[in-house]
Image (cartoon, rainbow, N blue to C red):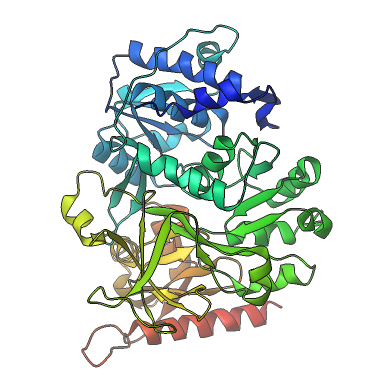
Length: 505
């Protein structure tokens, strides 16, 4: 079956800007993008790559990410965008687990690939060589391969419950349905413009923004690295019709001197996702007459529920209803649907849901049951059918849109000689939604323990996984089963965070 959507888009679309890169001062039509992808597809096959091989890219938001994704659809190669914010050890783990054959990269992030097999590093996407290969003025036609809908098209890695990276698989069918579901629900069309500031290694950036926009023939403005002041400038210049970002990004834009409320009021859909809704963000924007709409998804099921502008005014904390062709049920522990208003686990059934984890059949069986994806999020539904996220069933912390497993942080923290015992929890943060806090029992008193632990952690985990606050305790609070009382520890962290905030105001 033909899943070469970029070629079809180029055949049916007028010649107009499809991707604009203000940083590189370039713009490409859909016809250009198709030729670039065909040129790259030829190059990949000349490297000996074949259908089912994994090819990665380690780069910021750049047309090269789109090039490789489109070339993968032409060749049957599996596309893998890798999170450049990760620690080198985490990156090496993903490379090994995926069985990656070849990796494109941005030279700026080359140091993070120091412990990756250097023979896998293929080409700098900002090099003259890459530009020559993809140059649309030198077209090398490529006949796209036929693939099955259930073949794996892409991998995106996320942290699992054990803290080890897991490759979330996307079949051609799930990848395409994700884009179509959002496009149809929000009536995206070729007249639309959006800005992509969310990293394209995330489903929020790739699956929820790039795919539906480009499948609709819209214009995509690239922001290479997100920065609040620059985003405000792009919004003022390009006047997007819709915008999807994580809450902390909106927080950054509103704090800038060049924030213009009217620019945001002119956007048809202002959506926050990638993290649980932040009331503080919504309230701040509401003062300017701007409604931020909540969307919900996860790596395993990108953007499956979203609110509407009108409904968001009456129910700002709701994530709304399921998008087209998605069933969203709230189930009890026996997988029976709960009554209206009762809390249960949000479970999703749709063609855009992952078929499972790469080479992890046991863990796939845990999350896919009776045809539904068990999200691990507790939710409830009101009498109108609107959904609300209550809490997480598991202990994952989501800070600034990034998933963090407490046990992974605890393992790294416990390696420091000062630490006797530690417990990691998430605490309330007006900017990030949640930040990471660590309660520690020290082996000896040290007035500089926070600085020492911080330096230690930055050697072992990605920056967003490093605790933002430490609390030295004499004894660890325990619950009735003599396990660490994480609810009490969270209360302690929230109290300390509140005191710090008040002291600095």
